[in-house]
Length: 424
Image 1 (cartoon, rainbow, N blue to C red):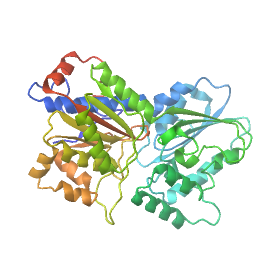
Image 2 (spheres, rainbow, N blue to C red):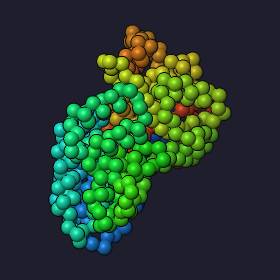
Image 3 (cartoon, rainbow, N blue to C red):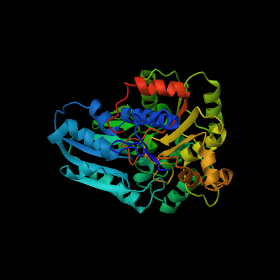
Image 4 (cartoon, one colour):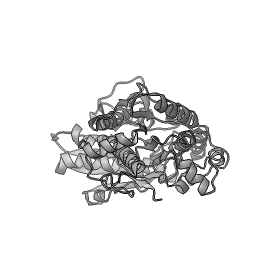
């Protein structure tokens, strides 16, 4: 069974929604979940989010775009600002450079490391310092920041070693501490995080557009505060959140409601252990009268000494699959909006009542994979991985639960008119 694909310019491998027959209701449900996930991605797409926030400039602009969505955000800025952009610096994750970026005039591109920084992160940091030092007083600086910047770019404080930085990141990721706490620790080692760029800019005006992947959408936390305020001092940076997890969750809910489905959206983000959340989400989906439940946040996983393949969304999905067995009307999708889950190239997974049966046929022990943090191996065997490629955004994780009878699924197919299926 091919893994499902759902992305900004990628087709879904599974059969089209319209072609699903009345005897293939499970395919209909899976297709619907993928479309709802796509609706969330479309709302927070970096290129469109930046373009919506900008207007024609009054003078020359320099752009520094940093994060997993840097490439898409830079394109959005060029769409609006055009020839006013004199220089562009793009620092992003390996494989996240859009082909169109190379056609831009006077663009400097750095592909760097994530989720653990390496020497390229330091090289990118030096390029950012050079960009700042050469910034003419007459030029308006525009910063485009998205999640991932904490690892992708770094300038260490005097006396701090690269080994200290690596140890902090490795321990933080393995222990599953909340990302806000990890970012706060990172900023203490850095010259540019925790308001460092604001200090370097001094009193000159600047603008920062941010895609938030953190609770509260606080610029002091996004990217470890790369464009956050400097403590104890004023700055002249105008900061705007152009996309957030709330926007993505709302878009999923609106898309589901347009299809005539009853929707439930919890008021708060989730941030618990992935396996515990799987129990909570499947329980809520089972007991709630709504047909669609949408959750947003980031789970955590405490890794064993030698973890296998997978990420927090795949771990959550596999844990949920064990609870969905025998519930043919229910399925659940858990995926990262950036298109990557852990150190894999998959965004997450979409599991249903038959996932565990497919694993049994493949002679794979789901419980053993959970213990070894090897959920990706199991979900690859069951055909449940969701692959998008780089999405051009990064607002956190989406979990979408669907509870739909066979009759209701057919009604949705026959009367659907709400979703834009240009990528499907």
